[in-house]
Amino acid sequence: MSIEIRNQIAARVARDIPEGAYVNLGIGLPTLVANHFDADKEVFLHTENGILGRWVAAEQGHEDWDLINAGKEPIALLPGASFFHHADSFGMMRGGHLDICVLGAYQVSAKGDLANWHTDSPNAVPAVGGAMDLAVGAKKVYIIMELLNKKGESKLLEQCSYPVTGLECVSRVYTDYATFEIEPDGVKVIEIVKDISITELQKLIPILIQPKLKTAV
Image (cartoon, rainbow, N blue to C red):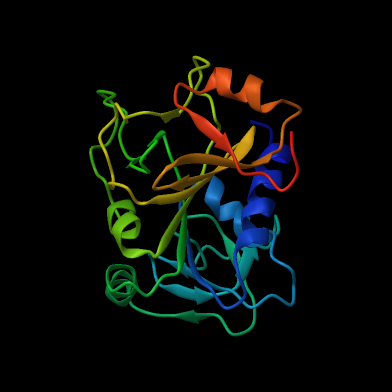
């Protein structure tokens, strides 16, 4: 996925996060969301390593490696941001104080199960990390991922085949093809972002998807 498309997806997520929300941004693609909020939008970004407030990616050549996000990327803090202990950060996560967390994923099931920590690869580090706490602690879980894996197979499935991080926890999935909402009665397409019809999109996904678009496609 090109950096342009990555930023387009991140911008869509930022647009959908409401004013005043407390939001955790996961490692990888989700960290780009921090760069796409309107300047006057008050959002409280949260990291596992203990930062709360607004920040953006540090400009090249102006990195301060004492200021990093959970993905160990250098950031620049905006006025009002604060630091606190790592244990307090996890207390926020586990105590239900986060409105939204934005995570990456290897797979998401039709029921909203999330698999984002292990692919059963023998060389992978077997540690679920804070994703487990975020999946069950945040009020809503938004996923950013490519719709298809390197084999061209859908990562949105009837059931996850990789080890699961959390059960029935995903609210919404943002991809390079479309944005999906996972509801009790099925997976709904709320936005198509690629030049593709619902029928063509359905051919890529092995589960039934239902249109819930503002305009017909």
